Image (cartoon, rainbow, N blue to C red; front, side, top):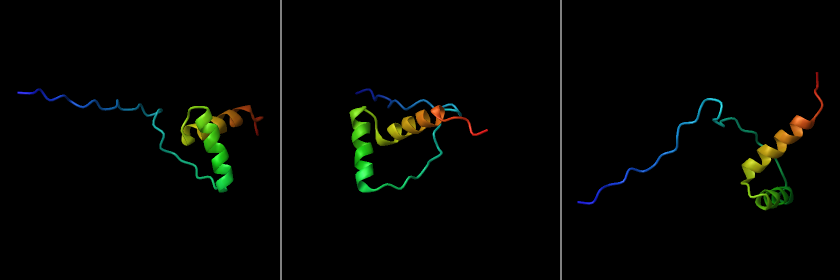
Length: 65
């Protein structure tokens, strides 16, 4: 009898690792294409590229306080 292999599931994320908040950004088709091309060039999916770019920009900005 063949032995059934258990499928491997992902480990549960810790509370600080889970990404469940979202931001919706309105773009023209041309703007989206430019960002998608940059994400592909950097080997990232669109969401990861946007997250990295926004966080880098936010961290460089002077404090508003």
